[in-house]
Structure formats: C-alpha cells, structure tokens
Amino acid sequence: MNPEEKIKSLRLAKGLTQQELSDQSGISLRTIQRIENGDVKPSLYSLKKLSEVLEVDLVGFFKDSEKKINVPNSKLSKTMNGLFSSFTLYRIPLLGSLSLVGLSILSFLFWPDGRPNESQPSQNYAFEVATVNCGSETECDIEVTKKDALGNILWQKTYGGTSYDKASQILPTENGGCTVLGSTSSFGAGNYDVLLLSVDASGELLWQKTYGGFFNEYGEKFEVAADANGYLIAGTQQTCPGSNVSADCRDFIWSFEVDGEGEEKGMKLIGG
Image (cartoon, rainbow, N blue to C red):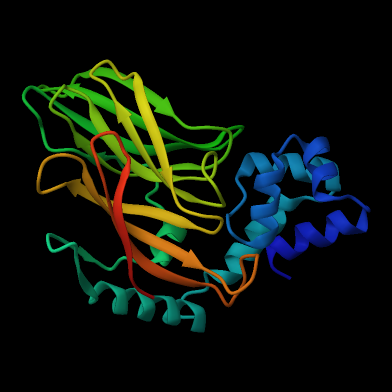
C-alpha cells in the first residue's frame, strides 16, 4: 500500500471525512486532498499532525516505503533513469527565442533541495532564490536573498502562503528589485499553479500573479521578453479527461508571455 492509500484508509477506518481530518489535525483541507490524490509528498510536519489524529506512526511508515522505493538497480530506478535521459535529449523552441532542455513534470518530483538559484550580478548586487521551510507549519516557502558585490547579505525575506510554495528561477529588475518564478498550491485556481512574484529593491512584494486552471501547472524557466516589456515563461500544464487528477492525465510543455505587470499576453501548449 502506498502512503496516500495508507492515509486515506486510516481516515476512512476512523469514519472521518477529509474536512474532519483537516479540523482535527490543523492541516488544510486542500493539502489533505492533494496528499490523498498523490499530488504532493506530505511534509514531516503534516505526517506528525496526521499521526496524532490517526494514531499511527506515519513518519516511520513513510521512511520504510522510501527505502523500498529507492532500492539500487531496481526496475523502477532503471525506468526513471531512462525517462530522465530521454527528457534531457529533448529540446524545444519557445516563442522563437527561448530554448529549454528537458522540461518535464518529473523534474518537479525532485525539487532542488535548498540550493539557491542565483541571478547574474546587476550593478553592485545579486540575488539568490531557494525553497525553504519544507516540513514546517507553512509547508514550503520561497526565500529571496539580496547580496552586495562582496557577498554580504543586504536583506533576506520569505514569501508564500499556508501550503506549498516553491522557487524555480530569479531575474533582477532595473529598479534594483527582482522577479521570481515558481509554483504554488497556496494561491491560484487549482492544485499547483505557476507563480510570479515582483519584489522591489527593499524586498517588499509589489504584486504576485498565478497562472493555470484546476489541475497542475508548474513554472520552470523564464526570460525577459524581446521587447523588454514582460517575460516569456515556460513550464508544464496538466490536462485530465475527468474532473480529478488520475493516471490518465497528461502533462504538456506550456509557454506563455506576460507584460511588465504580470498580465498574460498569450499562451500555447507545445506537446505532451
């Protein structure tokens, strides 16, 4: 039995609805739904809270499950390595100017483990962005660090909501601030949505925008548009034949353009 099935079966055995489990554990209903659907991996904090209500050591269960999954040279390991090799060789053009390598929903299952994504130095400062606080009460946050030319931290701030907010890339802006691309399950219209943050020179959030529908959309790469007014964004978008996430869902490479205020200018699906 996989972890999401384990949690669901324990909840049903106690006669609890997802809402009741949410109320008793303090974990948001949206997060519980994603865990049971297999859309997200529960954080250590979530496992501990759910264990208290379900009266089962879920932390130990998940550790045992991971050991079984990560057996060296297993059939699953070989299959995953083959998939990543295939995607690494896959190159696509994006709106005539952006070329991406290996865009795939699989990359988001193994999100960078805290290693900062650095911007190119702009004047006398540079930016770093990382995904932090995973396993805490707020699940995951986006952390932006601004440094001077000597590497000294000028400021360091976090952004995000009550669920999973994950960083992908950061670009500096002419006003001394930055724009951050990532993905969020705290905000937006559905499960995961593409997230774009605009931050000023002092680290204050100017605006944030989300893009996507009910299913899963992830932001992977972006660059300044050719006319310097906005950004070209690329990631993946999920489509499903039914109303819920299932094994029949497909992931497409998704690209679109936004203006300087984050408003969409155009989008397209490239292929699945």
